[in-house]
Image (cartoon, rainbow, N blue to C red; front, side, top):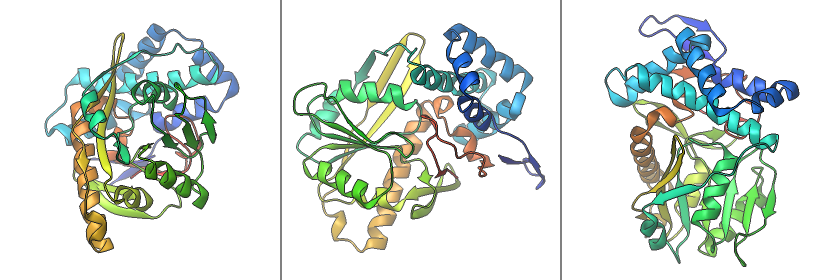
Length: 316
């Protein structure tokens, strides 16, 4: 990661905490040892990382949180972000080692999800949780509608349905066949889940801003959002000690956006999606796993796959 000193215009090359965690997860021995830690041991390690500011993790988090809040976030919020980064990576390691416990999610706003029944529905969800835990909440929230999940680096599969007649299809590559499969599920008034707050490397993109900083959105994702009658459903996934929670907000239902010229519809959709993301992230910014990308460019080292930062993406 290339970090730019605030206001100085100088640059220094450092390895980000995100990148260091990816390296750890790609080490078979390191990942196994990491997975064997207890949750309290992970929390203690995160506190030491924060206090020593290893990998400049605290400094980057403080700068990014200040962009979101407009004021100094305070030490507790910065420490909470470092802890959540480490915890999410630990959950990924545990899932890979088949050591993790299955989370029991609670949810509010489920009536908003019910409003989308009978309509093609696209979740707008910032990256706050590892995929293994997200799949559990998808199963709990949507037991009776077809679901498409897209994430490069994930194993393509059709999983067992939590109830008869509800397939959950995981698409792990960006091929035309994948796009067609997602379109078919949406055409059946199904649900599409992916993280829209980054773009996979090599995909067509649209440049906009998030919290005043440059951000790219996937052109293919915006195209899916423009389908007739599509519902954009904001969902925030968060955790507190002993509690996993999904907050569902009022959907935006798009009627005639497809009749607009492509450039106009793309611009409108990008504005809607980014406004949703800003609102969701602002609620619990310390749990946004891409927080540090607000204040640093991501270089090629941040590209190997693991299940909370998937493979080959361009984030900033």
